[in-house]
Image (cartoon, rainbow, N blue to C red; front, top):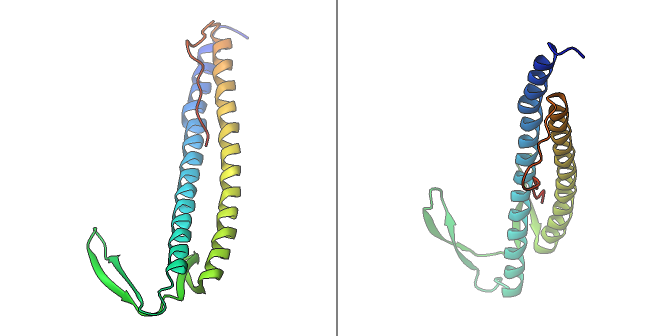
Length: 156
């Protein structure tokens, strides 16, 4: 390889690293974090359903506060809390009994966790590619750079 081509290769690798790999990694981590948020919401719903089942609000109804938006709450009375509406996806809600909702939540959380696992593996692959490109850049530039602390990022 001639010495004149080295700077252009370095620039190409740096552009690929910054414009493609780092952007891909950021996107994958953002998607994974969004799914973690969904899991947290479903687990919170599961807890609420279990509390409703334990308390058995069928006799005198359920009194609660409802957020209308911007942290503006109003008091609400639910005369029959035996059925609830659960968001099943694509903007659709389905009326379910408590047991049906708990079974749905278990399946939905398992499905989301499998997606999270795939995204975590994808993030690890992208990080490996980033490391490979960085090592290639070091080789091209004949650098003997060793970081003081090895780079470590927790994926989950």
